[in-house]
Structure formats: structure tokens, C-alpha cells
Amino acid sequence: MTKRPAEESGGQDAPLKAGDRPIQTGNATDAGPFEDEFDDEFESDDEILEAGVDGRPDEEREAEEKRDAMDMDQKTFIPGRDKLAAGESLSPDTSAYELLHNFTTTWPCLSFDIVPDQLGTNRKAYPATLYAVAGTQAESKKANQNELMVMKLSGLSRMDRKRIDGESDNDDDDDDDNDEENADPILETKSIPLPSTTNRIRARQYPQQNASRLPITQTATMLENSNVLIHDVTPHLTSFDSPGTIITPQQSNPIATLKMHRTEGYAIDWSPHVPQGKLLTGDNDGKMFITTCTDGGKWTPDTRPFLGHQSSVEDIQWSPSERNVFASASSDGMVKVWDVRSKTHKPAISVQVSETDVNVISWSRQTTHLLATGADDGRWAVWDLRQWKGSSDKASTSQPSPVASFSFHKEQITSIEWHPTDDSIMAVAAGDNTMTLWDLSVELDDEESKDTAGIQDVPPQLLFLHYMEMIKECHWHPQIPGCVVGTGGSGFGILKTISV
Image 1 (cartoon, one colour):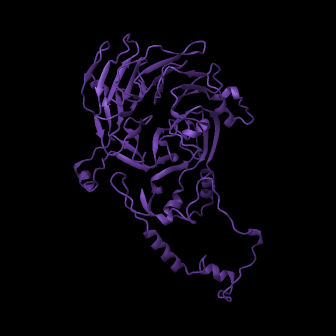
Image 2: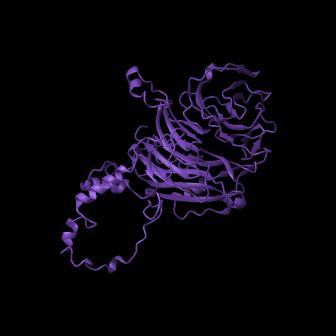
């Protein structure tokens, strides 16, 4: 991030927001020949062009542009350590991005999930396309305006490297390539009404019996009113790419409304091992329920909750490798591991991982004995579950040490997620308005340590820092390597750095 004087980010010459178009004053078709109101100071149009587009010599304009460029402070800005002076704002270093797009919705979406598509894996071509679902957070007086948004974003172009690097672009073939890659971004949405604010939303897919048809996509939405709604959003996704598709009001109704919670909650996760559907949810009373879809399509919650936390359950995740195991994180500072086959519904392992609330957890899909946690004090850590001792029938408390721990962020961790294919890369979002990318495999030798000695409090594992106001949640795209999406009070951000 670089700092920019305030007058460059506001006023009549401020950059246009996404979707805005410049306002033309006058009619271009009525323009006549050049008129010289200063008694023919320039004798011809050619003479005007030779003097520069604004009538000044090129040398004079170039000198002014150089002075203007010097007004930008190129120093790296580190939130939590550096402070903006009065009248300053932040500007991203676009040379560090391969992809960078931002967009806003009518109401903020503080939780979302990326929906896998049929466009292929390991995609690197541009323009890029992605599908997602999100839940809104409308003002309390306008709760009836809340919605579940099904979204398609297309035309996501890569950064124009030639423009960033200041190179000329005279090659016709390159121009044609850029025209294809530099498409205009398009956001398409389908709306499903919701009766309350969304606390958290998660999507899952499973194949249909007819393999030629698109997979079924369902969402589970935890609402502020304590209910959990399950929707089938397959028709809404299909409509984006099948013109003429009509979505009936019945198709926007929930296929199940779960009312077992008495307080609102934020913890929710679909089992990756049960195709017919198995859902975990946890609430602010510390209660966790499993809801299973029967063969007849009926969603049935367990009547007896899992109990063990002394405070609210903040996050919950199924093991990626063990069908009957899940982990939960709580504001009591504990992470607990559970086996659903236990008749007591008590945790198998309990570990105190923080003196503050544990807000989020992430289980590595590549190395399944690694679990990451993020806490209210800004610290996030990685734990080796093989060091967590316990028994299958009786909970025990152990105090292992994390295999990695970082306190770079000075505000609460709001989201954490392992890279889908690289178990050394992490994405972390925090209350200091930043999303950071980390490489846990980085280790500096003595010579490199000397070179970085002047960088205070910045771990060498920190790959990238992206400033995003009020960010709440981030997810990697599973099919576009290195692409990560974040959401918060200021809208959505989609980015891919040149370093990941």
C-alpha cells in the first residue's frame, strides 16, 4: 500500500467508481474547427498538437507530471504500526497484482461462499469467471430487504502490465490479446428473499443421478433470528448460462427451515463425506447440532446437542479425512475435537489455544493433522493434532505448543483459510482492515536475516498485505490458482497476486 494525498482521491477529478461513466458536457457531433480565442496565438491545429495536448511544450508538461508523481509517498504502509496523516488515503501498488477487482452490493454481505463450476480446474486464462453465494446484512429497520444473493462474475481481466510498467503498446497482435483479456467486468445476480440478516452461509454440491446434468448446489444460511435455512440454488445458477430459464417463486423457497437453536450462531459446516447432506451448526449458547437429510429428502436435526464449551461456539469444521470427527472453536478460548459416535456427546480432546475468543478455525485439506486457529487478540496459529492427547470415551485437557504462531495483526482475526492445494500457504483476514497471505515454508538464512533487519515486526513468512475496509471473510477459489476473494462492509474484493 502507498499513501496518496487526499486531493487525489476525491473531488471532481476523483477516479470513477465501478460501473460509472464519465459525463460529457456538450455534443461531440457539434464540435467545429479549433478556435483561437487568443488572437491566433497558434497558427494551425498541427502547431497546437506539436505544443502538447494542453497547449504547453512537452518538457513543461513532463516536468509537472514528475512533480505530481513525487506527491505520492511510496513507503509501504503497515496497518497497526503506521498511521495516516490528515488528508492522506491509501492506494494499492498495482504492480504487485495479477488480478484486482472490487464491487459492491446494495447491502453489505459479511459472509459468502464460492461455488465450484464446470469451467475446469487449474484455470489461468483471462478473462476469469466465478460463481458465489452470499447473504446480506441490511439495516435493522429494513430487515425485509435481506436476501440470499446467487452471483456470477465474468469478464474479470488481468492487470494491464504494459500500462503499469509504462511500456508502449504498438504491436497489433498484443492489442488483440489485450482486447480479449481486458473485458469489462460483469456482475449478474439472482435474489432469494430472507427474513433476517445472514450471520454465515456455506454451499455444497453433489452430483445428480443423470451425470450429464449440472450438480445440485445447496446453501445453508444461519440467520440472526436463530433459524437455519437450506435452499436449492441450482435453478438460479443454471439461469445464468441458459437464457430464457424461468425461476418460479417456489424454487426460491427454502427446502428446509431448522429451528433447533434458541440463540443466533455463526458456526456452520457441511460434511464432505455424506452426499445426501449432513450439516453441523453451533450457537451462542454453546450448543451444537447435527442435521441429516434422510432418503426421503427430509432434514432432521438431532434432538440432543453436543455440549462442552462454556461460551458461544464461534466456528466449526468437519475433519477432511475422518467421517465422524469434527472440531469446534469457542469464545471460551478452547478448541475441542469430537467423535459423533460417542454416546455421551462429550468432546474427545480439549485444548486451550488462546486467552481470548477463538473466532475461526481451518482444517488443512492437504495435511489433515494440521489445524489453524485465529483469535480475538490478533494471533493466529497452526497446530499439529497428533500432539493433542486424549481418549475416545473421555475428554482430557492437553497443553501442546503450536507449530507456528504469528501476532502480526493487532486486531481480531475474522477469517482464516488454507490454500486448497498448497499446505504452506494461508489467507488471513483481520479487524485491522487487512487480508494477508502467508507462506509457512519460508525460512531465512543468516545473510537474508541481515537484509531484513530493518523491517520491524514483519515476519518473513508474510507474503502479501491487501488493505480492505471492514473485511470479515475470505476464501480461496478452488479452481483458479492463487485467486482469493474477500468481503466486508465496503464490498467485495477479488485479487490474485504475482507472488502466489
